[in-house]
Length: 329
Image (cartoon, rainbow, N blue to C red; front, side):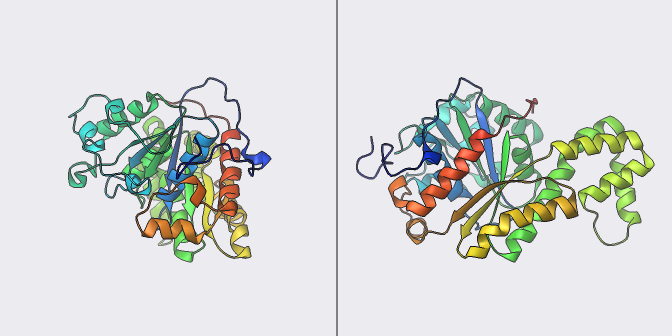
């Protein structure tokens, strides 16, 4: 391996941050790549992170869960496959493993996104559960779920059910604003389990209306509920304490962009009461984006030294994170 246009896994220029670990046998690790705004490079992050994890000796499957605009195959220079996620969601095939195809990158496989987006863009709850359970059974070490943009339930549900949900932002005000909206939407979706136990949906709506026109942030919702129902408030506090999305700054260009992530984590903690874990940044690299715009495959040797080192740092931090407690979706 390491010849031609394929990833050079044996490069001697890589730093200690990129050394291949010896992973112990473990369950498949699921990573969801999301963000509140389109056009921020989520798919590029998914593909390049997959390539980096493969370079470290892990078997990785990319699952294109952007049900309205699947495009991961394009990043790998592949034709649109005949069988896609549509066939699984609509039960034309029974096993998701039937849709796993090899890519030009050894060790990296792909489940391509929906061909008939209108039919599957809004899957029913049971269809989502079936898909999530099927992903967990794939024969791989890591599954990376590339999600669509926005805050609708399908995106948020996949984000919440993954072991690690990575929130991607770029150094733009609209991206940061949409990221905060995504966090709030994900938190409100997550506390459904508390609502099921305590029946607090009406209470949440009540306290929201009672505070006027300004929407409540998560920490205010918890405080307001706790004032009326201490047990429910305590349950919400536990959910808030365990809700720890990961943050990645993409397309960093200027020195100030490199501090955006830490600043956003601090703001989220202070204003929302939500704890973000900062994974790091990926610097903008023109050659990568030229390849994307030209519909050329993105491979490791095209990433550039700075981008590759950033990616190695992000992957290293990600693999150091413990898996959260398992929950049946």
